[in-house]
Image (cartoon, rainbow, N blue to C red):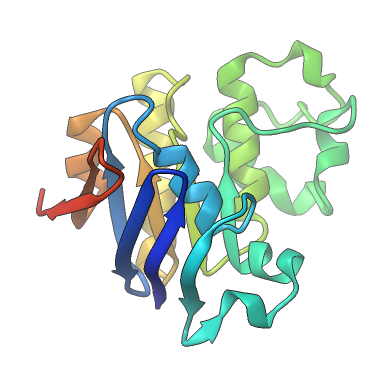
Length: 198
């Protein structure tokens, strides 16, 4: 279980719990702090408060170890090499996920520059899924995708959730929030959150 207690960053002040194998949808207008919250939980930005995974404090482990367990996926994932497969420790192992998300199985040698925004978004998700994290913090993971690609992502994440992965899924799409989330956390302009059921 992920426990977020009194997390503070700029105007944010948030507390919630995320059970194993649960997906919650994070909603709220642009600029309200959804990305700030996800990045703070992943310890990518300075923040105050208590964040625990299975009762273990985030500060009790090195930051890279925490981020392998609690993985943040940006809406625009970062790339550090010129070629797609150089971003994967084991490209052959990643291929089944790559093809499930509608990308061709020969895209490994492609240049990153050749990819569309949607292709980069799906490959970023595959990269995150390969870590087999306990918690996934997904920041608008289907914002650049058509409905078929978005549905493939939703199905894949639902499978991970059913196998015990916990997910916080930020989305502007209210219909998607109702589909993917067992609960909806709506962020307010004052930095707090309100919880509801889909």
